[in-house]
Amino acid sequence: MKRFDRLRQIRRLDPERDCLEIYRLSSAYEFPWDHTRALELALYRTYAVPSIGRLLDRTAELTERSQKRYDDTSLLLGAVVEHGFDSERGRMAIRRINQMHQRYDISNEDMRYVLCTFVVVPKRWIAEYGWRRLSEHELRATAAYYRRLGELMGIQDVPRTHQEFEECLDAYEAEHFGWDEGARRVSDATLGLMASWYPAPLRPAVRAASRALLDEPLRRAFRYPDPAPLTVSLVSSALRLRARVVRALPPRRRPHWARQNPEIRSYRAGFRIPELGTFPSAGAGCPVRPLGPLAAEE
Image 1 (spheres, rainbow, N blue to C red):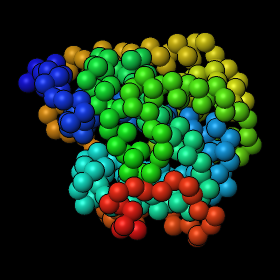
Image 2: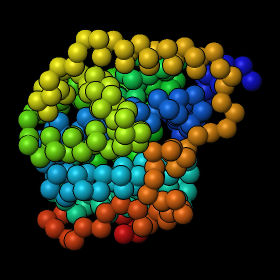
Image 3: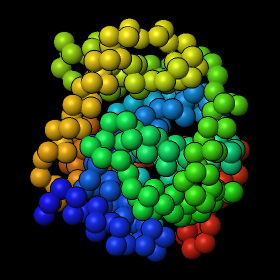
């Protein structure tokens, strides 16, 4: 197999009908490392919306149990990609996600924004740091994949096209990004978690590199100082150098799934999907309700 053979395979598929297969080929074969980093940044980005960051701080899941929360989120989202929407494992993962969200008073608009980050942030990351840009087929398939996921999560008014996802994200951030003390605590804890994956002497540099990847609206929302221009240049150059190296390598022959990420550390002996995530006591409830066959199985 040659470097661009899989892209040719993707272009022979239908972006709507085959959206899951295309998304798997893109995320598990072509860009597994980039997708992991981009989805980390996507979830991190949502903390800058005060209603989201404040809720996450109140639950203490990301400030006191950062590693487990990271692992559970990665494993639940990854199970849907690996096994599909209609598989037993995929349905269990979506059900578990819905059960968690229904315990909190989360607006449909916030849920839709989070979904938008999963579509838009990987596209922008790969355009900047990937070994090639995403094709139009991949962009259309990504939009179709997350449109389906949003429907199964009961999110209303989900954008249909990639451009609509981008417009929704940009407008929501422009209107809602802002300072919140609790959100800053969640942000600090997340940056600390990412640094903890590296040897202690490297952790200050990892924190600095992570902050250098934040754009100005994110830094302003969290009241972080601007990084040194040299740091930004070094981080960007390192990521672009990595992309050139990856481009020269043979294509991946086996998929890399989320459960294989070395950053996941809470389940050395394995895991069961129904036991992942949080199990909060019943509260005010959440207006986001699951649709279709998943609703009857709660």
